Every structure is written in C-alpha cells, then in structure tokens.
Image 1 (tube, one colour):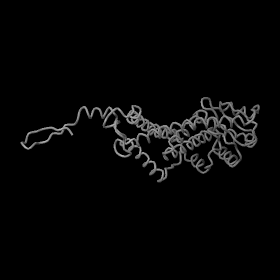
Image 2 (cartoon, rainbow, N blue to C red; image 1 turned 30 degrees about the vertical axis):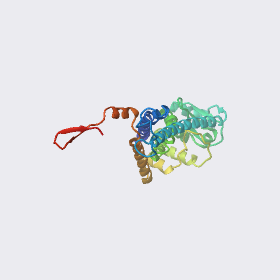
Image 3 (tube, helix red, strand yellow; image 1 turned 90 degrees about the vertical axis):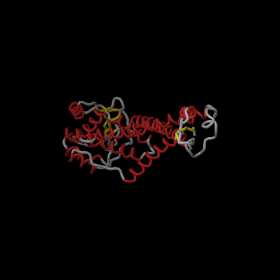
Image 4 (cartoon, rainbow, N blue to C red; image 1 turned 135 degrees about the vertical axis):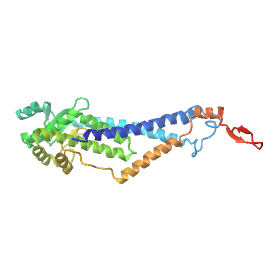
Length: 311
C-alpha cells in the first residue's frame, strides 16, 4: 500500500532532526556555562569571572533550559522503552499456556509460511509480538469465532507485521513521540505511522484472503473484549473501521493533515529552540579570542588620515 513506509520514515526524519538540534545545543551549553560553573568562575574576568545576568547574551538561563530539555528527552524516551517492554512481557505471560495447533490452523500456517501460537485465553485477539524475532499469537476465543477464510485473513494480516518487524517499529515510534513530548507534530506523525502499519497489513491480508473475508473478520472482532498487550501489533487495535475499509478500496492511505493548532504549536516550539540557540552565551574560547584580538574599526580623524581604535 502506498505511503506506509513513507509514514514511518517521516517520523524518523522529524525525530532525528529535532533530537540532533537539541543535542548540538546541549553540547554548546556544556561548552559555555558549565565550563564557567565547574571552573569556579575564574576563566574570564568579562565572562565567567562576573555574575551572569538572568537576561542578556551572557545569561545562564538558555543553557540550563537546553540541558534540562535534553536530559528530560533522554529520560522519557528510555522510560517509555523500559515500561512498554515490561508491560508487553507481563501481558504475554498472562495469556495462559499454548495449545496444540488444530489441523485448520496448521494448513493456514503452511500456506502463509509462519508459525502461530494458539493461546488458551478465551478473549478474542490475534497479535504479533517480539522485537527481534516477532511471532504470531492467536487466542482460542478468536480461533473458535472465525471460519477458515476469516482466520486466513487475520493471520495474513499478522504475517505482514512479522515481515516488516512492526512491533519493533511501533515501540520505536512510541518512544520517539513520548521523548519529543514538547512537539505535538511528533505525536501526530507517530499515530499516523501506527495507523499506516495496520492499513498496510490489511492490504496484504486482502491480497491473500480477499477483501470480503477481511471485512467480515473485522466486523466480528471489533468491539469484543481483548487484553491490553502493550506494544504488540494487534488485528483489532485500530477501531476506525471506516478508514480501514476506505484504505482497502483505494489502495492508499487516507490523507490526514495535522490540525492547525498542532501546526502552530509545533512551529512555536521549533522557533523557541532556535531562539534558545541564538541566546546561548559565547564559549570561553570565543571570549578569549575576542579579548586577545579586538576588532579594529577604521575611521577618519580630524586631519583626514585613517586611524584605528579598539572598542
């Protein structure tokens, strides 16, 4: 389906770009204010040697703001990674023991060239779990609910997630969007990417099992009780049935532009980051160079001869 990979890489480009810019600002902040603070305000009489004002070009406020923003970004991203991983592992352990695969399930596995674990859980779900080595798990409740054509569509959907390693992508996207909590555009793009992965898997399932079987499976599955499985991809994880059917008919992702509020807020945030970069004080090296090599300005004296003075 068109646009699935593009949605994911749009998140990557935005996140990497913003994170790289914040990292550069953090390095500059360390090279300016922290150098002064650690040295005990003894580096320069005109820079570190005097109290730095709250406002002005030599203020410590922008450097502190950049360092806090960078550290919070790292902590939130790592916290999301650990939390989502632990939640997923705990949820999978609560699904109950694996049952032997019935003949119908074995036939579908052979046709799709995948391995499927049949869980004894009575709830209705089918998911793809695993970061490095994803696998498909289907519950006994869903297996008993659907016919062979619907099961083929459901498992073909999850097989597409296995091929594209979508659980790992979903985890990365969630970590990135949470890390950039101050940029609404990142959260919008992450949601769009997660939706795009589901729609792409729907398209692959419709190619294998047919669109009618997939639609019937969606209608039977949506709305039924199912467990929260953390970052795994799940057949019924997207409740926007109209969008899924529209994507199956058009073979393209529905266009969803960010709201005006998201665009304006994101623009203001990016503008604020740029202003922080401009506001950061000059490094001690730059101040040393300025004092050692003052700028000479030529001017005309009363006799019309050129002279130079150092400010």
